[in-house]
Amino acid sequence: MTAVGANDTVRLTVINPNTTVAMTSLIEAEARRVAGPGTVVTGRTPAMGPASIESHYDEALSVPGVLEIIREDTQADAFVLACFGDPGLDAAREAASRPVIGIAEAAMKTASLLGRSFSVVTTMNRTVGRAWDLTRTYGLERQCAGVHACDIPVLELEEDQDHTYAVILAFAKTALAQDGSDAIVLGCAGMAGLPELLTQQLGVPVVDGVAAGTLLAESLVRQGLRPATHGELAPPPPKAFTGALSAFGRQG
Image (cartoon, rainbow, N blue to C red):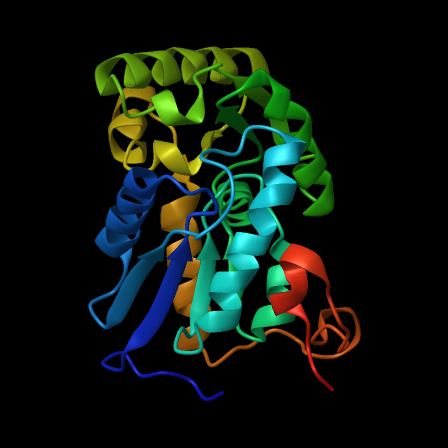
């Protein structure tokens, strides 16, 4: 893969791992807003999976739908996985052999460049442990000063946007005061579009993973960089799958 010039087309597929089309539209709009003029963004919604992802159960059952999109989409130069749990990220990277960016990793690593520490403001309290797990996976536990859940269900984020914004703003202020952090990471793809206004109100950088992931994926493609395809990230070995997963089998 060679580097892509500034005027060449980059094709990004932004996957919403849940099956709520309205959220896919929100995610796609934010990705298009920040993408460069030579980048074509396509939002994709899985054909199967949960309406929202708020538990380990939801996360596990979202992965086949994500992998189906990656297996079928041979035109994308890179993928953005737009759920803050980064569900199935390692499997997606094995299957894609092209860059796959999870928005939690993108947001946290971006925030780590903007100050000594950051705080995460996420949705449901039951997802806090997962967010902490990801800080350890990505080597950012020392930079993450706290994870705060505002307990707004994912699918309610868009129902009353003024209320949602007020609640997230209040939790972000509390997080900054309690944690002494330098930046805020928004812990849900459904919060896309809020960082600019929150940054103005809070006076600190506010990072949205959809925007961060889109620009990071675009950058990797323009640099001509692909992930390693040997060892752990080699394509999965051929084998048969049965039942509902029979289509996921690979022939040798």
